[in-house]
Image (cartoon, rainbow, N blue to C red; front, side, top):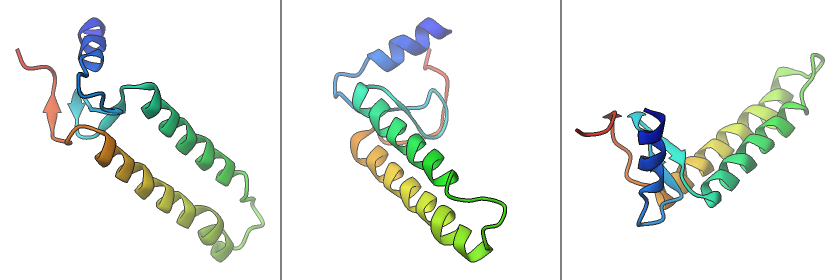
Length: 95
């Protein structure tokens, strides 16, 4: 199964940054550019998480963590749509 998955990701003549997930709906990074975008997103969310503590008021948490994470997620989804395959529900490789 793993070999089939790797072959599916490597079969990328259009050089999509993100390939359609093999199971379910969404994308997975397929090139180094896709991995860089995913890594930047993850690092940004982790850094934002360090800005909140137990004494932070709720309103401050919204503007310093929740809103930026929502905006970053929207940006990531836009990049995936522009640089990735068209998403669709998939459940394994076609036989």
